[in-house]
Image (tube, rainbow, N blue to C red; front, side, top):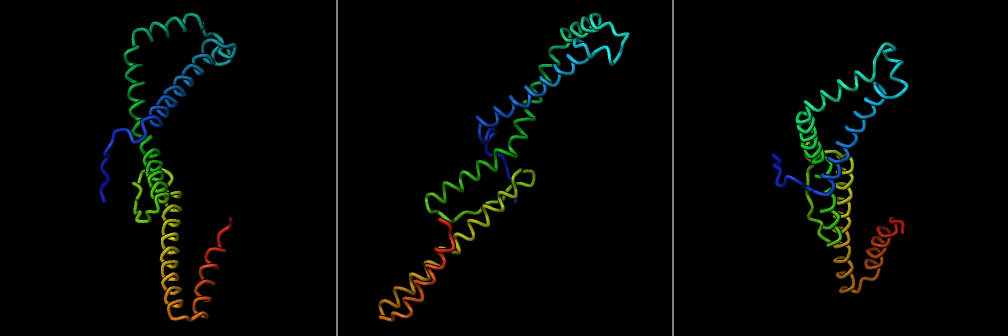
Length: 175
């Protein structure tokens, strides 16, 4: 089964937030490295002969000359973060749709996660739960039909047995 992306943003709020977090963490890491190497008292540990003022001046000149490259890097990281966030936002979006279907009492739910999606174990749990719930409802329908038939025939022992089956099924749930 081939999956085609229907939307660029599955959950724009999440995906933009995720991208900003990735970029901010990358920039924070970069700043921490620069601080440790050039500004902090620790810089002497790495190279005692290092003239940190001269190195910082050279670094800032390089930065001013190459700032478009930095912006391009940030843009590419943003695109990567948005693409990567599809593997998280896609399953979350699908799980929300499943829960909405369950709330609306629609058990005709079939779904497959893409091979690169995260949370596959959660997807398997959803599938198992929906299938178990569907089977339970089918059993309830059959039990109700049996109970109606037993009631029509005034077969109280069969009615009692059917109601016991329903009660046993319901009692299995913790409330």
